[in-house]
Image (cartoon, rainbow, N blue to C red; front, side, top):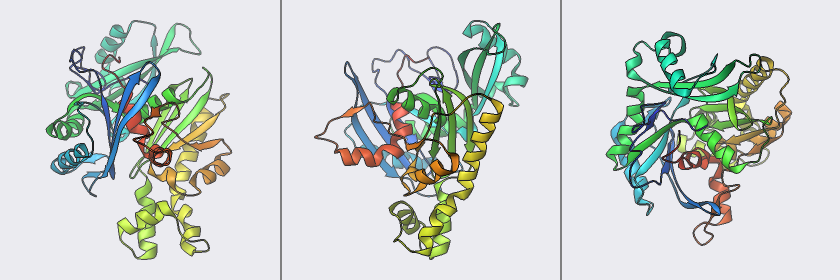
Amino acid sequence: MRMSLIIAGRREAMFLKKDIFSIEKNIIGIDIGSSLIKLVDLEDTPQGYVLQGFAQIPLEKGVIEDGQVVDPGALTNTIKDLAKLTKITTKNVATALSGHFAIVKKASFRAMEEDGLRDLIMDEADEYLPFDDIGKVNFDLHVLGENALNTEQIDVIIAAAEKKIIKSYTSPIEKAGYSVVIVDVDSFALETAYEENYDFDDEDVVVLVNIGASMTNINVARGGGSVFTRNIMLGGNAITEALKEKLGVTFEEAEKIKIEGISEGSDVSEDLLLYAEPIFMEIERSIDFFISSLGGLSIQKLLVSGGCAKIKGLVDVLRDRLRLDVETMNPFEKISYNEKTFSSSYIESIGPTAALAVGLALRRMDDK
């Protein structure tokens, strides 16, 4: 879903897109998570997208808490360190805002042009944009198409966020020497990566689940377009904390154990996926709610990304619980790479954590 919470040069829209007439048209994706920052550089060639650069670096615990930037100075310094790991010269950046701070809702309107929709939403902001001061908010919209029950209406996805929250993400990046030209919503960036890498029909329904360190994003897409989103304030850190308490180790040691696994027969090995039970329950509830509210649709597949997608057995548990075809998402399914620079094993290893950054790197200056 190609929306943006910032679009300067055209108008301030969903979050941020600016400098649309800049000579440099390439964009790199920078995904700021609460535990890792990822950078992806893609080249758009006649043969398709090619991965030119990738880097990730740990973010000190506490710099971002519950999706909110707590220490912008430390974030800037970490982004500078990330830049040193690459030889990328591109300065235009697409980044994503945590869905926890973005209002995303679906609404129906009588059929009209996009400019008319924007004016109507502004005029009736109390109904569609639940903020005290609409002047302090950026928003964007995406027309899904004709309403299934009323052909005279269209369904629209609206996303909005406060400018101060947007700035809290963009300012540290710009102080690191970049120009933020697009600010997306994390679940929509994941959808962009899916659209580029997977084949689907207009009626195909897929669930995209990104389990990050502190948050889980759920995006249900039909025919490549979002029809349901939800953000859960639970992620891999909850599993790590439980392991930390169980084993009496440091957070860093518990994090390593979480991903690399524990020897067979260990009590902790049996407990590991039990610590993820609250996350599993919320994913299951979200899917049940979606199915009950939009009856008649069948889900073809669930794709899991994020650091927790690497946990041994997690995909199998979700497959058994949900009785769905569950796979780890591959954001490089149709994106090639230089085999002299990247090995196939490395690409496979970074895939789950790179998905959001890939979706961001796929954005272009002329996106609406």
